[in-house]
Image (tube, rainbow, N blue to C red; front, side, top):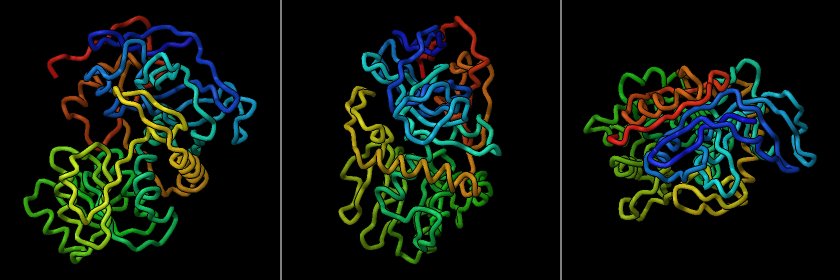
Length: 359
């Protein structure tokens, strides 16, 4: 049996015992040790996008329990791996989110991580890095690191999880990295590789960015894509053939005609349709192929060589029983430049959690 945090009516979450998930010939059955929280987790519950019976959660670190006979990568039982699964999927499709003691994932879409990285830190890596990598390398076609690209890029909202990884990946590709964040985060983001940091609240921030790049900026990555951020990013992009990556849908009329937009969402990497957030996300074989290539690079080069550091971790007590408090913190915008992580061994049964309907 496997403990999992199951969605019920009226925004309720209940820790339940479920049978072990069934794995296929190309899959790994993984015992989850740690899960990391993402905004999509609470949003799918709060906005009732996750149907009753589904399991939310995407990012996990764990240990291989069973290996499918056709699984690639030469994985062995007991190996430490990390990955992300599509959380909040309609339960009739049999896809289990990460907030569960056991998950199934195709072997090509997980990665090993070095012993110098703790499992709680490893859990912060999968979703945010593949989102950043899809935007930087797959969509905008910047060179995969390590490289000496030399291009300038604006990473808007650099203190977000995606932003922190985008800064590091762009730097490892040889870019000159400009980012925005609250002034309290600037020193940390420079440690990650940002060349220049600006306060996004500064009314002259766009002018200052344009001065630094001498009006020739062609690459932008909007890591928040809400609250008017896309207008700021686009205003700074004055170079020829400018491109911008967004992580949430934005109105098309907010993208000037000289800028090409790339909307990225990691649901495209799994090789099959994903029914989540009341939408159907079509399979994109080219996205899956890129994700497999990138996770190999992550495992073999970026992490062992220290070119990518995990997000800062804040451990939440109580395992999955602590998710209620974690969701509340994120909903109230009390999570900044950190990742909330839960340890599965601390999870107990039973307990009903309920999101505050006033938020």
